[in-house]
Image (cartoon, rainbow, N blue to C red; front, side):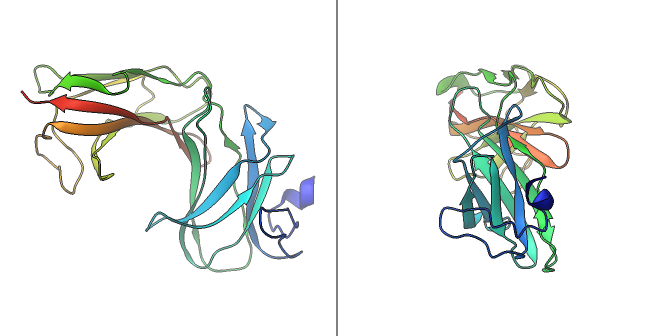
Length: 220
């Protein structure tokens, strides 16, 4: 068993800059693609509140990574991909109490397992939706175990505009009214450029998402 489950990791897994000292508490885990270890992937540690990257590590030939355990706070480890057949990102959020135990992160699987966005196509110009003529989003099913999927729209500043219900579904309809606050709660979303993607909630607290597509809401 690799470094006694990596957990309390001081396994000295090689990072891109340093080798962690033996016995040092670490955030550790493995990156796979449909169960096959993935080497050379950069796993980033974020301050979850500010979305600032505070550290990172490269996976070894066995897909393992190790990052020194952070101080108390809310954190996220995340790995991203732009390869066909992969998810846009896979992430795991956690809270550290500042103790020195380290953490074994559930496996981060980059494989999309058949999941991909269908409609609207990237950069599509669409009529502004309303309750009579909603905008229809569709995607292919994630063909592995998961809890729910949800379509998300963000504006050009990264603010979330709308999110569909958390369901094990492959489509959602949007009536053009924002349901996120600030600044769109209960307001008709104005014409302009937006981004959409679908987020997945997997098991063991792991979350994932497709890559983003752009849509342009035309004036009525």
